Length: 581
Ligand code: GLY
Image (cartoon, rainbow, N blue to C red; front, side, top):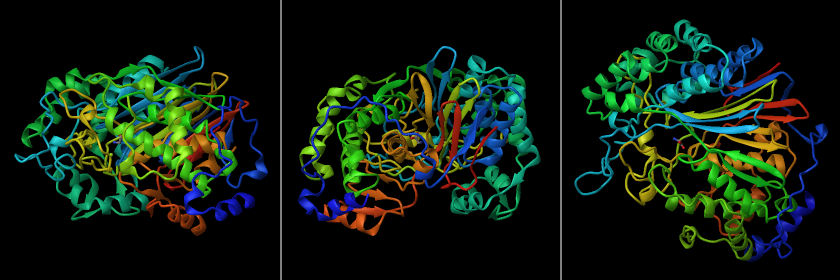
């Protein structure tokens, strides 16, 4: 490590990014032989052999663990966790939003992607967030009834249970119903979030009635009881998804929409379907990567970047050295430039997925990364062939004793979504419409630029960054991971994989390693606190505009090695827990 540092310090800024001895290399297919060298890892995951869950809310982790212990499989536990997080993590867990699930079925060896992303209502239109001069109307796609996409979570969770679960819906939903009815203590983390979003939440009497005590949001130690949400959950438990999409809940959502100029109709809800899709596949240094396909951009760009990095010996330049950061950041920039141009809902637009994930294209990216100095973002165009998202999405991972694995990332988009509780349903509604490109070239809430491919169209799904991902070894899950973090999800998951594969870190060490991010535009290298000042200086000297900003991502990771599960819940949210038995 010291010699790497010494080498880096000796580099002039021009030569810094590309040390002479770094040459394009043939991709190595040898699987790293490292395993947990216990003493080499500074942080440690929990271990178990029968089953494990990792979520960012310990109450939901308890629910998942109990389901596994009583004989439920990974999908049963994942569905129970999904409903429980809607109660216990109201800023991101949801039934009024949408998301993605990867299911690895141990028996067949197949990994399936389930898309329950929100859809634009049929009455949505390309310029719906622009005024008569074509200017974006500030916050219309964030905190209004028109910001709400047709929710997919209930369709997704119930479909997953029907297809791959083993327990009845009412049984896996019971813990969530009890949590909502009896309430639970507001943590300091949640109290802070409620305070930050006070104005957005306080505007709506239906929301205020739940999350406020008088004029102030609930605070640490208060009990959050959600009777209306409990009633909605009971309806779903008894009647299935129809209660939400065709029954009493649908009626109330539509009534609330009509009262506030919203666009969602009964037809929109009745027509919603969760869709099974082919996973995006890749391989990296002998491991197989399976991740979420469109309408997520995550899988495509994780595979694209890993394909390029396979040619770049980052192991030699060392974890989080200035040179490694630079090489990876240059790769990230090129992937995000492509994202802005090509990616959108593949049910509506033709996306060159094959090319974006091809080894040849990646080699050409690696060549440009390795050949020159740091390329200013404006000089990078999408290959020839994004405002900052808040972190308020959530991910969880589950593995059972049969070797089934589930990775779910789902969201309301921003913290507490639109902030709107639909009528008397107790259900917080998303503001996922902001993930569309409201106007080509104008960044969204997460600084992401989008183009025509991600323009608003009726019934289309907005492009996402959510990236539930599995790394397989010999056809079996070796790493199950994912993260919230908006635009930063993709680069967070990338680093989680690299830290495991290239640097031999266990999930705890990989998670605690400070993260960096570059998304092409804005032309900024974003770092978490925790990089050494020397490294920051080297990066700045090399020409990067470095910004130290709030932490990125909250991964929930399980690794399986020789039958032992190693789990870790990202301490960036202290409310989370990995639990196993
Ligand atoms: N709303 C965050 C995402 O889907 O990427």
